[in-house]
Image 1 (tube, rainbow, N blue to C red):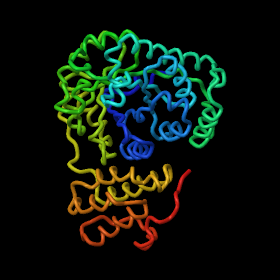
Image 2: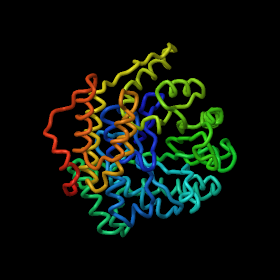
Image 3: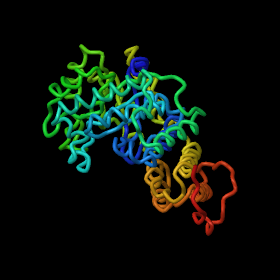
Image 4: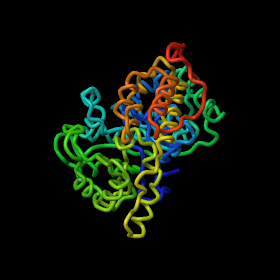
Length: 392
């Protein structure tokens, strides 16, 4: 089932970001913004097969995130065949292959955007993923592949915790997509897309920079527009990505290039509400009328409540010992209100959800126009952050 084809255009989704789009970030964004599609952080195929704990952490998701796509990366077609079974067994709505990561540790091994230099391997990877999905759809099991018993057990546990099923109640043939870039050290978008478009992908997400650019300079949306022309004769959707900070940018880029959709990445950091009015973009583009968005749709009270909700969700899922990874999210939330800089400084030292709540309540007491926090007993300042881990 190709869910991509069923989403009203333009598709406005959450871009995968390494170290950012973890399970808690995705849950909060899905609940308060509801993007059209959500992708996980990219997962190394070897880790997915040989490290069940990595699998538990990186491929855990909530039903509220649907449609949810698992993004994986690597360079060995045989392993993509196996991981495709795992992704299907976990009940994902789609499988996305990362051919766009510019990080040295990824590209130096021939993975990510380095695959642009090895188009034949890239093709074999896509074909292996398609075969894996097809064979799983036709009844092949994880046991048939002789995968590790603890991996299979971990998958069953994830599924049971999420929806009460060990295995998906229905074997769906999920779509394959690719996220990539304009080229390696120069723009070769027409040539490179020509290779990918032969592999019957459901969608291609195209970041408007080369590997060598990394995230420097401006995304080249003119090159993305040329990619749209290349993809138009096919059934593959072309999704643009790069420097879209808000829905106004999404509206402008769709008008400018004719892309089938836009993935928003850094613009969604600290702003899960960004996608809340995505339908206004769709309606304005359909009617040809000017798009009008509310100046501010999020009160300080709601912002603070979501900060606490996000913190508590992260702590339940990951444990208090890993709360340091939550701090960057906390600082992103603290902007565009009086006293935000002071609050950011405090959030960089937060060690628990209780401490976050305490700091926000303290802020509300010091600023008469601040939000009223949800009521709950807050521990003494001295006791905050000294309890043991909380995990599920």
